[in-house]
Image (cartoon, rainbow, N blue to C red; front, side, top):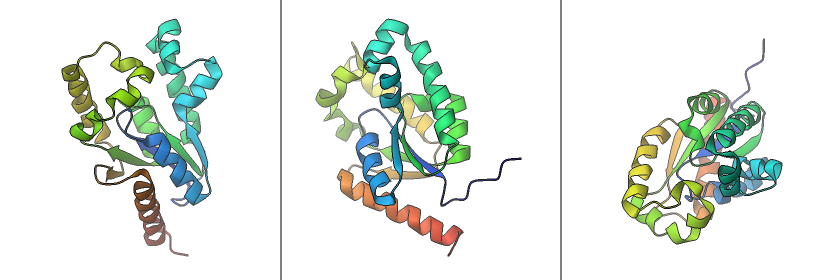
Length: 183
């Protein structure tokens, strides 16, 4: 029987809509907590030797999602990592379950109005947005928001820059550690 991972050793997983800052904030949190950072999409891109948009085009979304599920399952069961999940990965029930059972899951929440301002920066690298109207994107944004409601902690990013968000997350984690497992 596996020994349960202590709260201090659990990996931290970031979820949220594409382009909210999971990778940027995740890297900052990892650095502040002296942990390794893993971006699931980047790891899959390295394996396939192409960007996610090309994987979707060449192999299809199904192949990408299967590899994503395998990798997330493997990484979430390890200790002391900070993990950034792709915006669509949490739609898979298996991924939600393994994350919630094995990690501290932070939902990085951004309002529609704030996210809309970022579209120009991210649209070319997000295959799910290709060919979608603003109304379609908004519908997808709110549909996924319901899925992201399954988390351990939520951080509203509207009034925070990435550094402030990372600092808030680190402070809340350290407080939880002290309350749960005082040393």
